[in-house]
Image 1 (cartoon, one colour):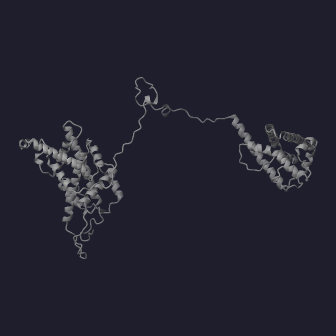
Image 2 (tube, one colour):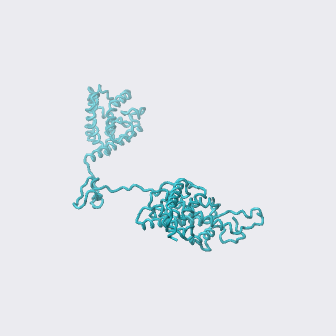
Image 3 (cartoon, helix red, strand yellow):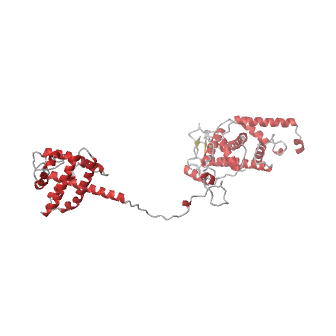
Length: 369
Length: 137
């Protein structure tokens, strides 16, 4: 069955349905389909939208009217539940304007032989059975309501004596009592210190890396980290520094030999000593790096002790000197603690530490000179 | 009149009861076009309380019969209108699509006491308001 008229758009239809008898869209849609099927059964090939809407309205009103009349008759008889006799009487009421056979014999004792029923019977016998096109679920669908739990269910006792426990519980106090709100900044001194130390270490590390790059560019002589400056062993700026360092290193020859710390002067043994020094310092450096929380720096390992030497050389620049002094002391202090934990290379590291301390002391003496 | 009809034989009454129960039983076999759920929905709205599905079926069948009667009358109105004669399509003169229009429906419903006449200017088809001669399917 196809639509006969296209003038009425679907939008108009939907707007119109809102203004109509207030039925739900779903039930109206089902009614439309049912009416269209009935019309098709009668013999129509098409319909106008407005005509079908009117027919749907009429059908719905018929059903409602029949239900109302039936209920009226049941209530008149003192009942609330309707039965067949009420329905038949309702049918007769609705059929009266058009008339049906036996209308004059209505309201007799026996409603069973009513003409209305007879007509319906004939219709059932005569008409073709056209079931509804699609399966219709039970509607309207009733959702489970979430009830407010009672006092008993909540496990509370009502505050007032006149309130029984089976009643719904009162809402929580925080829903209606206004409490002051302020911003609480938790100041944990420990976390503050840790944060500060972390920032210091981060600055240290970046500075060391900068020094390293400078060293590599400036073709340094004595570099502990063999990786970045493998070839750069020119005696450049650092020669002076190395010379100055000679004194403390030579002083500790006895201990030094075992540690195999290079004197940092002779270029011949440089590579060997570089590697050995790197090996010596590598665990400490790694431990330092691992101990740091921020592992974002993917920089290469660089021993801090080495940097102290460089700074010493460029004595005039107090910018590096002063703050790093503290950092170096910190680093040394830290390394000493680490050294305490590692038992394997304790001797070597202690000697290294001692040497560096000596260098630090000399560092302070040097500017005075 | 009432006295005559009220003195029905108990046997007749018995037959009538049997007929009615048979009819209600047969209703369960017959599936009306209007689905049961829809009818139940609207009956519940009206206050009709009955858990018996046979009564719902009865109401559904009654409504279907009513609508079918209205539609049949409208169909007759549609057929009764003089067919549009086209010069070129002589063979297809009498063949016209039977479309349920508002005019036919309003004429059919008037007998039932329902007044659903639309205004003259109400246009629900593209051919509304055009000359009858140029009116096509």
